Length: 212
Ligand code: URA
Image 1 (tube, helix red, strand yellow):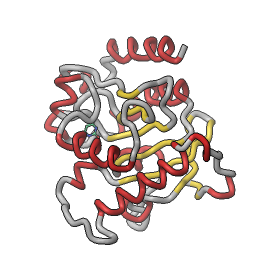
Image 2 (image 1 turned 120 degrees about the vertical axis):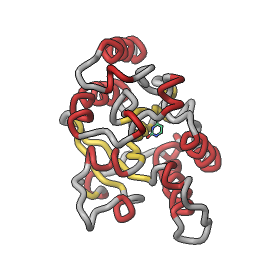
Image 3 (image 1 turned 90 degrees about the vertical axis):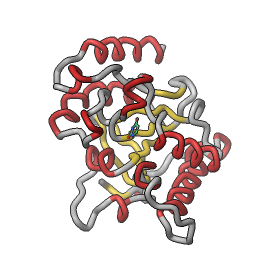
C-alpha cells in the first residue's frame, strides 16, 4: 500500500518542472530505503553529481561516509531508514537549494513523510534543519544537533533530531571527545537506542521534546 502511494508521488515528481532544477537534472532523486520497514526518515540537502547520475540519494563520497557511520551505529540504511532530500533535483554546481526551490518541492517531501509515517525524523545538515526549524546565530546546527525537538509537518507532530551533514565531516577528521565525528557517533547511537530497538520502543511524551 505504501509503495503504491509512493509510486503516485514519484510519478508526479518525474513530471515536475515547477522550478529550474527540473530542466538541468539528469535524474530525479526520489528516495532510498525500504518504505515498509523504515522507522525513521532521514532528510538530506540535495542530490549531488553522483546522485543525479544514479537517481539515488547519498551515493557519492558524503553518502559513503554516512554509510560507514550508520554501519558503525548498527543502523541499517536499507531496512531502518527512508532517505530523502529537501529537493529532488540536483542544484547546478551543487549549490545550496534556494528557499523557492525547497518550497516548490515541499509538497512531495511532505507526502512521502505522511505515507511513511515514521517514528522520528533526522534532519541531516543545516539545510534540512533550516527547512523545519527556526534557526539564527544562536540556534545553529552545532548548537541544536543531538537534541530531540518536536516538528510539525502537515499538522502532524514528529520527534526530530538534527545531525551533522557527512559533507562537513569529510572536512574534519578528529576523533577526539567532542569532535564533530564523535558527536555524529553519539547522535546516531541515541537515535538507534530511542527509535530502532523494537523491544524498547516507546514514543516520547510531548513534554520531553523541545518545541522547534
Ligand atoms: N548530500 C545530500 O544532502 N544528499 C544527497 O543525496 C547527497 C549528498
